[in-house]
Amino acid sequence: MYTPALKHTLLASVVMAVASTSLLAATTTDAVLAEVAAGEWRSADDKARDLVRKPIENLRFWGLKPAASILEVQSGSGWWTRILAPYAVRTGGRYSVTAADLANPSLSAAMRKGRADLAARLADRKIYGEVNLVNWGATTAPLAENRFDFILLSRAIHGWMSVDGLVDRNFASLAGSLKPGGVLAVEQHRANPGTQDPKAESGYVTETFVIEAAKKAGLRLADRSEINSNLKDTKDHPFGVWTLPPTRTTVPYGSGKAPDPSFDRSKYDAIGESDRMTLRFVKNSM
Image 1: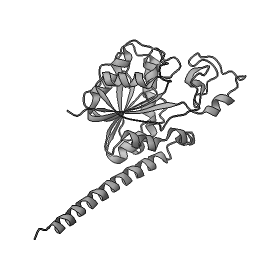
Image 2 (image 1 turned 120 degrees about the vertical axis):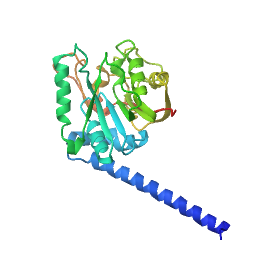
Image 3 (image 1 turned 30 degrees about the horizontal axis):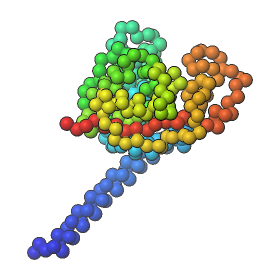
Image 4 (image 1 turned 60 degrees about the horizontal axis):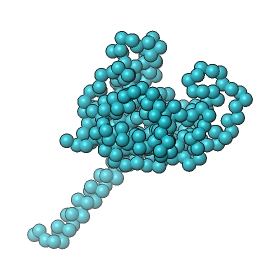
């Protein structure tokens, strides 16, 4: 006989089963993240930065899920790449990364070599899976629509601000390439409110600027975190954010000048890495 007591027991069983499944999923995800963060393919320098860059905490906040289709934008030295690509292959997902646009007839030999070098660094399929290199550049056509579950945009936005219209163009392309419900994860050197340099020559960008650019592209700010905040960062350094670790420049960034051995780095090394915003944007479901 179906009684209120039996109903209560059945409901309790369902709740326990769901809770157990959720716990198992979280444990499995955490275990994979921990595994790839400790991977032998990551250098000692990579792992030393985990203390300040907090990869596991950030990826949990951003909501990276197993089996996700991932795009990393402008991967730089590959610090995030060596976590994201192994995570994707171990959870049944797919990792893609932007690279020099081979469709651009004006692409320089150096840019072509950079793309080839990137492919070579990610060639070990046992570690990185089958990596997809995505054309990306100032003249690139918009990315394919509704392709990715998770896009990471780390420390790249300031570099777009020197070219008129590029911020809006790139955000629109990224938003279009997200699946409904997909996440754009942003980590960016953070300027103080009301201090935005239109060209971001210091490398710092205000949260307001980023949020407005994402909203204009049709994305919704789902959450923000202080995981990557650094209250010691005064943001008034002689060579912009690149004065700080890990770049630690002693001459204007990109000047090609030789390092200045007389420059006193102690103040800037004591600050550590930059104060950074950590934002999660979502593409609304249809």
